[in-house]
Image (cartoon, rainbow, N blue to C red; front, top):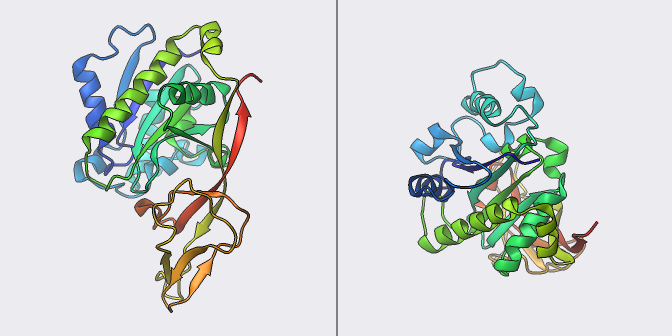
Length: 290
């Protein structure tokens, strides 16, 4: 049973919507009268001050059991992950609903990233989509396998991603849209379960992560290709076998060879260090009644 809602910003320090929004909500007292208490957390405080994604390591990959139970203090984000686990956890703390605010440099619009541990997360996302039809829902089991994100601290958690937005930049339209999503999520969390069920459609379309396409590199570790211009900014548009995917340094083109799917995070700036050019998803219809 959810007894507290936490809105997190600045998990990545160069994504400014989260920190500025939690400051606004806190100053406005937007949810001060909420039946379920709402609190706020600036996650990566040091990286936010320097407008960097992270200091030593990605905080949103630092919530593994090994790190949380470890004692090595040499990596700032690992120390901070243990601090956050003490604040929000201990993992998993299923009395808390976590809403983690992010932005992306890719052309994904407003998306909700849902962990599939709890039906509540998908139902909450579907409720938002009813009120904001342009919102897309992504479901990934990656976190189930690695259990490394901040949202892994509770089974009741989801991330908001909005883009395209350059790192270190604020946009009022995307700021306001993110605030609207938060309000719908909290409205849903405050509904009695019977009311939640009657407010939902029978099913919802989701984009389920199936694969990642990596950049090729040479023996010195340098990139030998970039995302092909015909694919750039085509997030959520079908990618079929034989379509151009990468423009190689030698002038040749690498075509897509997998099953038809819907790419997301195409040419995401933050994923260069993970060597990921794009993520492939399948479009599926999922029942909300089971």
